[in-house]
Length: 120
Image 1 (cartoon, rainbow, N blue to C red):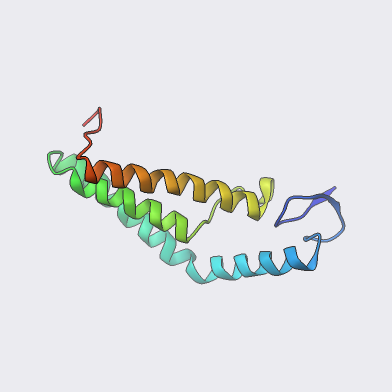
Image 2 (cartoon, rainbow, N blue to C red; image 1 turned 135 degrees about the horizontal axis):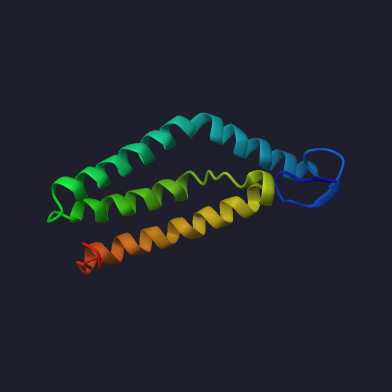
């Protein structure tokens, strides 16, 4: 029993259940192919800088706050996830964008209100 790669409907014969799902799925895969290395680079650099900043300069936490916002924006613009095979592209994009919105809100709140993380 195959599932549509875009909307995750069951009992289909092809990879996609309709032409609309096929067009949206192909557009997503083309977008992924075009930006996957840029996405990986931003994520890698951001995480590396956060780790180095916390290890070397724990008193200057503003960098981590800004990079939390950057990570949230990156995932919102590039909603690439590893759950496409299990829940479909549509649901993956929804979940990734929901989590990225939470990251953006946490980043903005921590910058504006100078929120101190409990462990730092």
